[in-house]
Length: 148
Picture: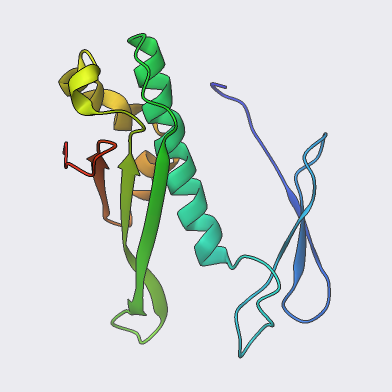
């Protein structure tokens, strides 16, 4: 994907609803601002940002596990963000927390320290977003034991 440009088209619907067109065979996605601006009939931009970070981290962990020929599926990821006002009084995403959980015990995964040490480097989105928003990442095994 190096040097490749991607694009989407966003078309306003009713109020603060927008139809996001990704092109090709990817279905359109309706987004909407939460009340009081919108009606909340779709994910908000903040939720899309969280989804992008969480999905990319999950993809990167899965990629790295498979690169080392390790099975830890199914993976689960939860992400949250803190939205607060900046110095100018404008709402901004202040930080993101992501917790990834492996589908297997850590004891059954070879090279786990190495995998956990490098997987984030493959994540295009979190490595880009993290330049402006602090992102904290935790990885747990299937039993909920912290690995990072």
